[in-house]
Image (cartoon, rainbow, N blue to C red; front, side, top):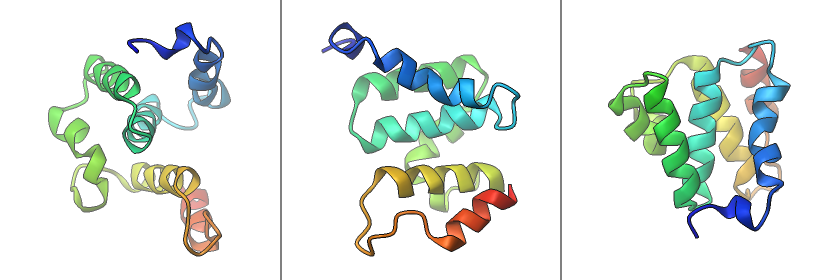
Amino acid sequence: MPDPQHLVPELADIGAAPYRATGNRSVPRTTIGLIQLRAGQIVGNTYLTIMHTTSLRKAGESEERIAAVASWRDAPYFTGPERAALALLEAVIQPSAQGERVTNALYAEVRAH
């Protein structure tokens, strides 16, 4: 399926939500692009992964940073705020064996940024 929006037109609104929520640029567009790319990778969606990779390239992101999103925890290319955003995304999207997805420590880290 080349473009899932043909079947679910609401996907465009869902994908645009982070941009609307941070319209004041409180979260840099690059950071939003990185978390959108990581989300596409986590859910195994090639369309989203390619779309956000292309967007990040057009925004001037380096190939190293784009390639390292999948392994961001041990990659030297990301800032503290970007790491916090990626950790939050993973906590929200992926199930947790402990039950609590966003721990108090993660919440505090994200809030600090």
